[in-house]
Image 1 (cartoon, rainbow, N blue to C red):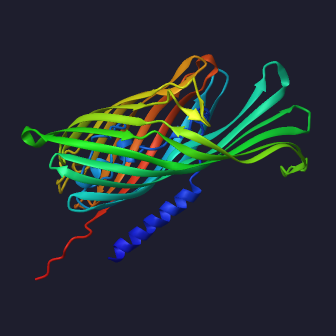
Image 2: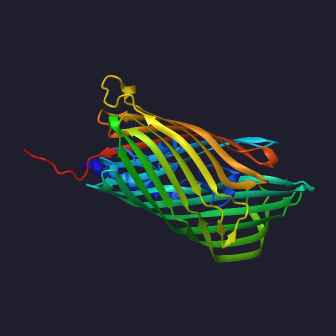
Image 3: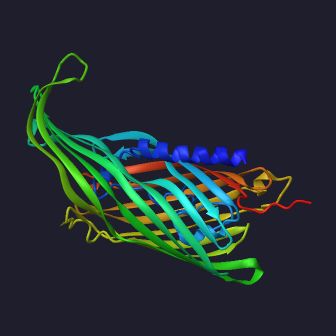
Length: 422
């Protein structure tokens, strides 16, 4: 009991602390568009299989990408995930590399007889960019763009096993966050600078429904079909705008002096649309042995709006993935690596961005290991690696070659189990 209490308190502390401290999740100029770089459904285990998660379930790992998976858990499971992204940026003129580390998930699932309840936290999206531009018509003029912040999500999910082969579930996400975007402009040799700064606060609810259907086949195999639908919703926003001029002190401290406000507006009401997202996956599975699948995702950005204004350059996002896992022999006593889960996958996405006439694409491969701790398999250290490329250097754009290292600790334990006494 003491172990359970300590684990639950640690989980709660992580959830609250992460929600407050969660910031950027990877510097990218593409995160300036829409609601930022998406981070939802970036579960460490699912991403190691290329993102095939709509039909995935097992007895000891959480899958928040489809809430219908929760009743398949055989024990209470709590998971903590951490991602480290290493990105190399390249244009036709220069290159740069950056890295960032962030908490990707904190989840707790409580299974009951035919149902299950989830409580969790995860980042939803991130906005993070800093770049300097020169005016091609004026060599002395320059502009610095700086953006940071993002959206986070608290989630509560519930699922029910309707029949032996069909389960349904729903996630209710409270999405919230802050973003700051500034444009600093000036001229070489001129001490006075002008900054335009806008800070926004967003909040609202998003709902995701899911279903998983399983049909038993010969030899202990099963055919699994999974589908999810996340509702399009409108977040309520508040904006603060400030335009001012200033000069630096010149003493090397970076202190601003002689500030003059040109424009200020506070608490401007607005909206931010989140497009609906749907996924369909099909796979073949044998419990404690293997699972393979393919998945297609669609996200409707065609009518994306910020403060009621449509972005005509946005396109609908389409993603295709294939992946799976394999366990050589889950109950091997002498050979540890036969009990390891080996994961693999590949993916391609035509994103919602079309810049300078170029569709921004994202493609890559993934690998992962599920390392059991102890013979009962209640605790697992899951490692993942995603290698990918997004964008292009054509037409003045940015190519991102990235490597994402992913770690997820899964702890499982029997709760709500009636004890037997002799």
